[in-house]
Length: 284
Image (cartoon, rainbow, N blue to C red; front, side):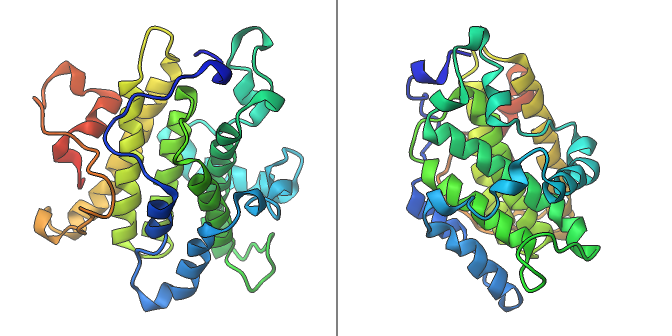
């Protein structure tokens, strides 16, 4: 892909989110038993510059707790679905030829997307670790899953209004789905899952919309892996509601209606990330 400095605003695919809408997503749960966790996530209205201050050590490859959480994320989630880990800033720059991009020249929005994705991965990695009594960060009185998810959400809120380089669209989509997963399995919040899932699909569909001759084929493959991951977790939502659309959480009006009308379900164009834009997939 062309270097980030040369990027043009991405083609519009449905409506975009603003930071106010994203902050609204962080308060969709109405369950009393998760009030404290919801408040922690709702702190995403804070300063993005401070979002990773307490967690920067965890992002370093030599940090023991960070390595533990990354291993947990890979072993319990990512490896199962074939999802590659989010690269570091230097690793992302290696994708561009001839050293044309360095960590120092990455736009702030791109850095925010990378760090948001890495923090969301750590948050998912903390799910089994928390059950095993792992403290690691924040002391025994805090919830590391929500602490890390809240930091990730602050970074996402800081960049949703800016054009994201196409090479990062997969990480942006994955970040939102990891937040959906946390809502589903950690907070028992099916409405939150449905909202974050919809936003994830909105960005996932843009991988197909922005595809071109210079596209990284690995991004398309990873988009298909992520779509399989979404479908796998959708099966739980589908089964729990008896396959009845009327029993599904109502997210219309909460997020942009980014999914289009149904097309021929057997068309070759409905393969991979293009499935994310099909209207009949708006709920599961």
